[in-house]
Length: 595
Ligand code: ARG
Image (tube, helix red, strand yellow):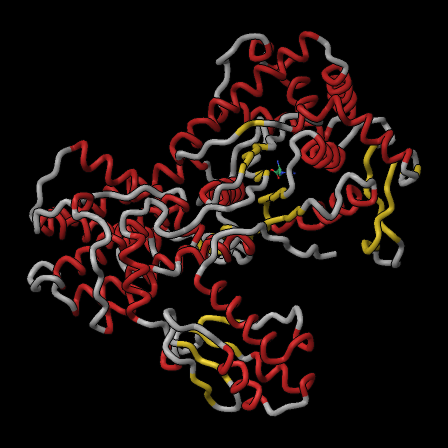
């Protein structure tokens, strides 16, 4: 059941102001007949028609029993957009078109030029939001799926934080469950000192041991029994098992930390084990609500809307016949804890699309148990697969899962090679420090941006060549636009920060007007993102900004023009740079002053 998204009262973006004005005009013209109707003001589909449009007159024709054109005329009569837009026009059968007043745009741009938030107001009623992301599994290698979750989750958290929300970033690591029984049982015979001394293994070894343990588990019944006993021993808190588990977790954690540091992404670890003590209570609560049914020894909740091939309702198992709990039980405990203890009103789960059913089931049970109410919004933010250039799931040449460390290192190494080739072409000498820094920023930004710039619902093809290209919708293209603006300031010996404030901005040329309008759309984009949680919208916005800036820069001389145009154009340059920097920071990407 889709939950209506309730957005808290927030910044008044331009489009919202226009919407309010439309609503006012509608009610003045038609009274209660149009109460609660959304005037559907949207950006114009074609700049020829203006900047915004509303087709509301067409959809009101039936209920009001009037010609759409006549309705449009009455709306326009009552529509007061003076000071913001030129006189509204009506086109075709009744489309209402609005074109922004250059003077309004000029005033807005002047007003935001020294505002660190660039005119984006922060939320008036902040919400407690949990973003559950990254969440790799201990003793298993972090794979590209976790990379996607890490990058997307971090960006969503940054955007919500920027808007002023109180965000808790949670790493729901898989640090509990049967894999430990297997691993501990296996290490007890093959490498016992790994269970008692720190640093005995690195994650690579751990993964190999895990793989071997799993092989043995799958083919050896006696070993299965031993592994199960180890799980029970661990869960009942036996000292040596706890210690072994702790050591294994630490080893994985150290390795994960390296990746988080490299990506500059930080979150709070609250793994599955955290909820372990709460699991019996979850089951008890479900029992008391009358939701629990025993089915061949297992405790289940029968789901609504989930059926097997025969049309029978599917069960969600919350306690297995051997008394053990599972992934779903832990998520039930987690959702309950997050609502009752963390007091979250929005919980966002960033995982691959393959877990959509899992979350739909957990949400349903939590709702029926009464833990999840309409005051709380829960969303699964799914994403597609990362594919190799052959269109198959991304793997190494020998068919293994790619280690994230290797992937990031390769991105940096390739960025470095590109940079050196460019320096050579341009006959430039740079220090080692410069090269290392630039290669690192470009390499990592390219990986992050390639992921974020795709609609996350689709699969995407991982291509180093594409993501590192200076052309197209890539991180290097945006970083280059930023660096280009900084070079203007260096060339003109201008300190952007000391230009003063409230400088008059003039939008006389078409390219200036186009750029100016785009600069003022940031709040709109962020507002949309808060609702749809699609970072590719922000990428697209920044990409278009760079394109519009480049057009402006080709058509309008900056340093060589006369005052007051020169200063006004410098302000446009600076605003573009600041918008790029802010936007990129919300994607987890840092800028370069030179590259
Ligand atoms: N550890 C899981 C995996 O690797 C992801 C956990 C996602 N979060 C959650 N609350 N279930 O697939």
